[in-house]
Length: 361
Image (cartoon, rainbow, N blue to C red; front, side, top):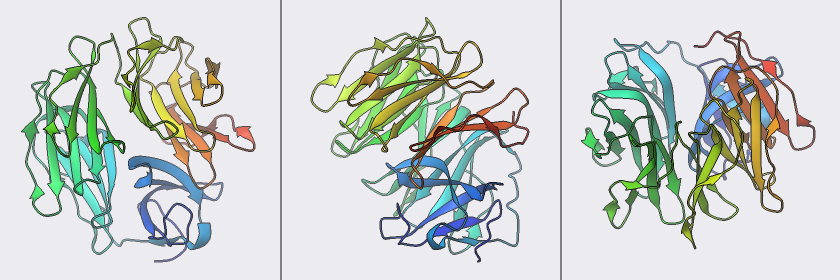
């Protein structure tokens, strides 16, 4: 353990570091950047959700654990985008991905023993899994679309271990998204249905699973979901059949709003985040011109309308809020198959696009 990070090491946050809530924190080091920062992946850093963010290498005494071995891939190497979750029960960083055999595979890092190596969790899934930590019971819950197009769940309990796969029914046609709702303790899962409507199934600590409920609409992309800390809303965004962005939100006082068009002409699934720097909810998507476009909602000014952030991207964007510096960071694959970043700083504004290299597909 030392103060020099390497890709694959684990960053250890002291309790004094802002955002550690006096308890400390750990994160997986994705990359070490030329500007004196590290790109980290973790969970429970912002609103009980997975996050990827950058921090200064030596931020307030942060140190790094290194390992003598490299985790080996499973017999069927993961394919598709992995899901990552931080488990506060044991400090593990857990990575889930679909293998070439269609099963879900897990590799976790333990503060005591390091990387576990890959283990199959079985199942037969299509698309990419999503993982969420449930503060109600300490479970780590993994959801994915099965080969029968139903939603399937496999969860790990601190007392019972892995549950095995259970079908939650439904007929979904895309990867699910999940969110923890602090208003009521629900775990809420949303997915694109076979009828192009948005469908929801939620688990309540008192009543259990709700069963699938249609939220209507005509959507053509994977949805994005965000918890808005400014008003307690759960907000869902998706591309409509007219290629505009559409929103349906749930309010603690008014229930579901119904669908509203936010205009635009987008060619990717949207991504949404809550920005604590200003209370905005910000939505990003690829436009018909290949550029990144943004539309944000402000508590004082409402919706901004669409603004181009330039660039030439060839994938769905991902975005996150970095509590270290208040930045909002957006990443996407470029036309050269490198990873590109454009970030917004509360003082300096947008950085413009910077290549982070690599060859991603």
